[in-house]
Length: 251
Image 1: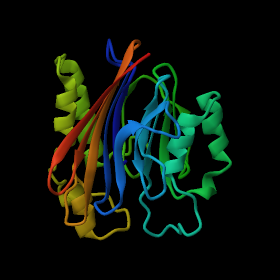
Image 2: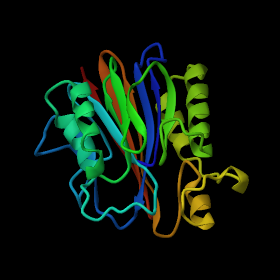
Image 3: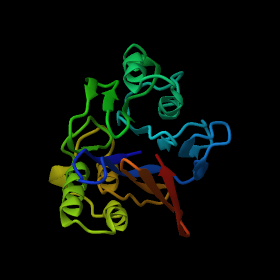
């Protein structure tokens, strides 16, 4: 994932709302959201190169999602795949807080990341790039390729858009969130972050929805979690078409 916007214990019905975009090179092989054959309790897309994932949920209601921390100078040779962090969080049989605390001592094993994991009653964030393990309090949050709630234009726009949709009390909020995630307006140069990539790339990466010749938003996912069920909707983009995957998980 390159953008996760989420509302935790804010909505009167949905205790956790997540709207997220996964950005990746178009050539990287990927499976659509599905229940994994080797872990049937996990619903998630899958990176077929490293066999991890960027976001998923279990039949028991555990959620996890990850963004990369952008640092082109970081040495990644010999480090583990970040996608296994999400997969392992979903597979973990014990308390999610214990799993997250266990990552603190392993921060150098992976390239920079932000990881969210929990459920509708307990949610945690951890980054191996400068933030301690944090229990998430009720509110609306956003994270892209820096730290939680870093005020990048896309993060601010995503949080503001989510707040407006929730306040609108619309019945069809899934489609509204998907529309929000497809906003491809670039940020003005004076608001762009300086992450060490070229100005051309900063511009290209600045919208919520990214489009370029070889790299872009591959999927948008919306998850609504209530006390009774989870709605999990994934909209997948290729250079040629768009397709939707929709699941309901009873809790």
